[in-house]
Length: 204
Image (cartoon, rainbow, N blue to C red; front, side, top):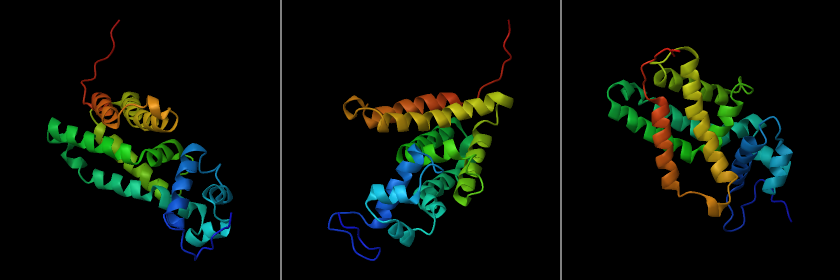
């Protein structure tokens, strides 16, 4: 198999090198981890040379930015509407539905920064992701206190992201539920987990 030069056009019907490399990198970052993925591995899987990767992306960090940056941009857009959460239950529900649609569209990106956010702190795009997740937690869980708010939010966000990745990556296609059914179930479960509740101490 011939290796295309960085400047050459891809064969007819094949995505551009940057698009292919970004897609392969995202899959590897989500499944193997950023630390466990090398530029050479990405190049080999995509069918390019390492020099071609470096032609399009100056570093592995730049490739991470390209891979998950659009998802962070969309998450930050969603945060622009977060002030409406307290206006009504309907506004909160609309936000949750938009958030589930975000998870469905960017499942691998979310899986990547949720699971590796702490270990990759200091990388600009990850710091943006961590700040956005913190802002979501502050707004959704402000009616709860202590460990419960963190667990409630963590189960809702992390559980939904993991469920999507597991269902769509590790389930036989013939066994997968229809996408609209998955969406409806996620909206129902996440809405229940993130709904404001009146905290009541457990009694014996």
